[in-house]
Image 1 (tube, protein in one colour):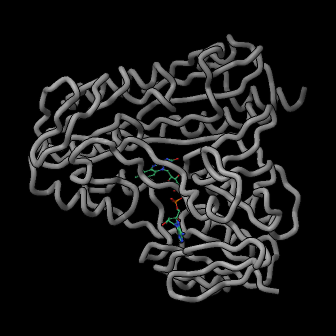
Image 2 (image 1 turned 30 degrees about the vertical axis):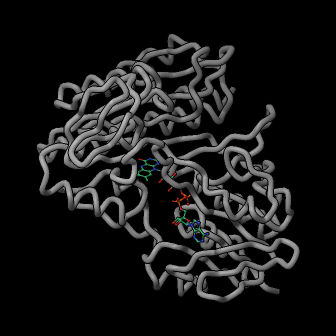
Length: 401
Ligand SMILES: Cc1cc2nc3c(=O)[nH]c(=O)nc-3n(C[C@H](O)[C@H](O)[C@H](O)COP(=O)(O)OP(=O)(O)OC[C@H]3O[C@@H](n4cnc5c(N)ncnc54)[C@H](O)[C@@H]3O)c2cc1C
C-alpha cells in the first residue's frame, strides 16, 4: 500500500489529512504544500487584530506528527502521472499513491493592463505581510476590485487612517456573492467611513504613484492592491489529462474522471444534481468538501451536498449567507436589534438566508436558518418576517410535522 497523497496544504488539504484519520484510515498520508509555513487559515489575513497580520495555524507540528501525517512543507508537486499513480516533487522525490487528493486552491487573477506587476496580490500570508508592512509608511492605497476581499481590506486600511480608493469595473461593489440590499448597506457604510469609489471603471495603466483609469483620470496611490478575484489552480490536473472547466471537474462524490483522484476546495468544480458543475470559494466549503473527499478516499460513498455558507467582517459589521440566494427568489425581511435577516423562498420552500448585523449578532439566527433550509420546509412568510417568532420554535414544529 502506497497510501494517500494530498497536494496542497491549505484549508482543504489539511482538513482532509486529519479527516482521513478520523475516518479510520491507517495507511500513509502525505501532505504536500508549496508554502514555507505550517498550514494556516486565510480568512484572518484580511481581518487583522490591532492592525497586525495574523498567522493562524490550522494545526501545529505536533498535531501533524501525532496523526502520522507526513507534511512536506515548502515542497511543490510538479507533475502527476495517473497511469503510474505517482507525483513528481520539486525536491526531486517521487511519491507513489493509491489515492490522490488535489487541493491546490486558487491563484489571484492577473490584471491585463500595463504596469500590472506593480500591483500587490492578496492571497497568502506573504502577500498580507507585504501589504500591511508597506501600508505602515504610506498615506494612500488603491484597491482594484470591490469584491469581498477588496472591501475587507478597505475597511482595515481605513481603520489605520489611510486614504483608500476602490476601483471596480461593475456599477456597484460586492455584486457577485452578496445579496443586493446588504451589498448596498455595506457600500454606504464604506462611503461613510471615507472610502472613495470609482465604479464602472476599467484600468488603463498602473504607474509608480497612480492608477490611470480607462477614462483617462488618475487615482493617486502609493500602493496598489489587486483584488479582482481568483482562478482555480488546475494546472497539474490539466497536464495530467483530467477534465477541467471552471475548476477540476468532479462527480458528486468529489471524484475526478480518474477513480483514484479526488478534488476538493477552491480548485474543485462539483457536479450538481440539476446538471453542470459548481465551484465555491469559501472557508467552510473547503472544509466540508475535504471531509467528504477524505471519507470517500477511505472507502466511503458519500455525496457532497452541504449548504454553501460564507461570512465576511467589515468594520463592526458581520455578514453571513447560507444557501444561494437568486434574483427570482421571494425575499422575506426580518428586522433585528442592530441588524436584519433576509430569507429566500423558492416556490414557498426556504432555500437560503442572509444576515447583516453588528459583530457576530446574526450568527445564531443564520445557524437556525441553515437547519430550517436543511429540513426542506416551507414556512409561512409572516412567521419568518416576525422577529417575535422564534426560529428555534419554527424548526421544532417543522420537525414535528
Ligand atoms: C485574504 C482572504 C480572506 C478570506 N476570507 C474569507 C472569509 O471571511 N470567509 C470565507 O468563507 N472565506 C474566506 N476566504 C476564502 C477561503 O480562505 C478559501 O476559500 C479557502 O482557503 C480555500 O481553501 P483551499 O484549501 O481550497 O485553497 P487554498 O487555501 O488556496 O490552499 C491551496 C494550497 O495549495 C498549495 N498548492 C497549490 N498548488 C500546489 C502544488 N502543485 N504543490 C503543492 N502545493 C500546492 C497552495 O500554495 C496553497 O497553499 C478568504 C481568502 C483570502 C485569501
